[in-house]
Length: 397
Image 1: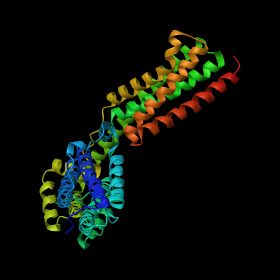
Image 2 (image 1 turned 60 degrees about the horizontal axis):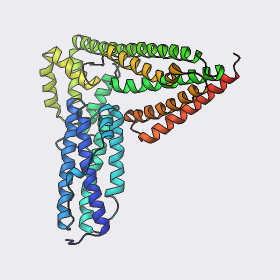
Image 3 (image 1 turned 90 degrees about the horizontal axis):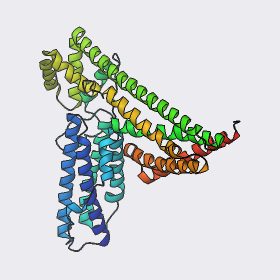
Image 4 (image 1 turned 90 degrees about the vertical axis):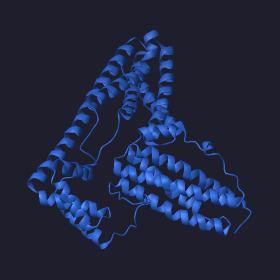
């Protein structure tokens, strides 16, 4: 057993130690937004990360490497906001990519210390299974397990038969994908749309009229129109989602009433795909089938991710409309107090600053770098505003 750490072993163990802490915390944050079954898998994966950390700390002690305080490993406020706001599928995709990257970068390469390499190889296998488990959750086919890790890719013969039977049944039904999102994400995109649209209007009319009072009229009209358009669009979209979910649940209820045996078989097959033996799965499905409402809830969870609970259309409309209106007012502000070239220049400056802020906020949803997202949005604003201004100069007045 090694008694002194090589620099490479020390750096790699510290890197792995930090990675396990970050991964565990991120799994906990994402789990809060998932249904109970998937959340349970992520929480067990978080516990597994804590177990990895303990083994890494044991090796660090053997090598005389000081263990830093856990409080020194921080998840930034921005990452925490992303975990609360970004689409869950995108968060899981980022975690899956992070697990894959960690396997390649931290655990695969030799450290020059045989015992440390052996430990990292063992943990690497678990990390690979974590990546697979996250992929299973993303595909909507997560399976349970005592360690939180996904099973081997190959299905057992029983599971293969169950999958084949389930596919046959599901082809006769129209499925539905879980939808997600929240008013915060809608508000960010609303502010983005309002700012971009009205900045183009303000720039164009400023070019055509040399920053006259007409800019204020056109800008306010554009802001009101954009806000109302976004509000009605968000309301109708959210209501349509709720209607689709209600139709799916109603169809499933009808199928339970008309084809109870087939639906019972379908539920049993779902359980078998989780690794439950056929006899137990049949027994569970049989017991649930005695209560149609309980069976409906179980099938709705397996097929649609829930009973169709969706967002509030009024909340979506208010968030989208208000945020769009506020974003749209930004380019108009200077023209409330002045006109002419100075007002045009100030409108361009505050609008481009607004573009940067909105772009940075969008990274809460897209998980991109906030500064790059802000710069990209600013560049887009410069292109839109510049083109609109040139068009305005060319227009007859």
